[in-house]
Length: 302
Image (cartoon, rainbow, N blue to C red; front, side, top):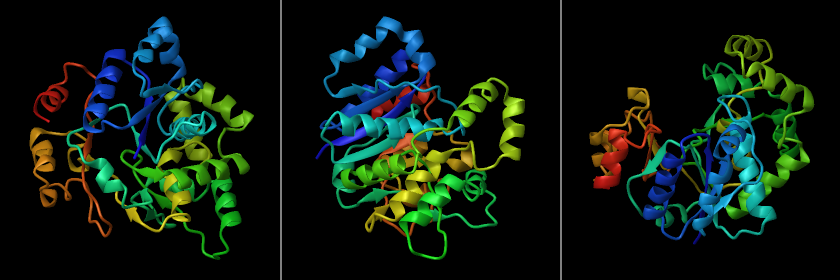
């Protein structure tokens, strides 16, 4: 079985290399598809050729300007899927990751092969306090797409953290085709123009997002979870552990509990009350610093 890890990177070549080694160490038969942000690609210049030494690493030729909660994370991952499919790269699952994730234990293949999708798939309600959820309910393009694909009178949208979520090959292909048919694979010219202007001014960006909800937000936390819901039957929770109770800060105790599979000591911190199967194999957040103490601890003890 081949896992394709989709990772969006935007800084620090030495940290990207460390992440590649970490992912391959715990997932030896896997491949990695990197989306390198436009600014980072310009910064790397000839250094990007360094990745050619890894025959399991694919570089997405498309480079977007990536940011937070501005559509770009979803578009970057979708572009990675597009590159895998159009280049006829063989894979059985695509797994989504951030550039500050690290694996701490092996065995992912044996776990996810039992499922179609990994996603929290929590339903977004009209009284949702979650920012991405509030935006999703006003996302006309997503709503139109869902209405076209289901005869159910009640509109159902779902959310999930992107890190550690995954799709099997067939579902990733269906979602890719669905996004292309419904023009969900790109911003329209007006939105892209606004994004390029507003991304440089956080104050104006905040005002714009408040006024025009459903246009620019963390779509990666909604689109994959919502669209996969209509294609999947066997679903697990995402496999990346996130310590929400400690502002995403991971400590040694968290890692040791994952290695010892002491899930009951972790789920409260992760805000997880699972009704679906789950296991943790990786963690977020590990600072993008090659000398970060948790990075060193993982590299030396896992």
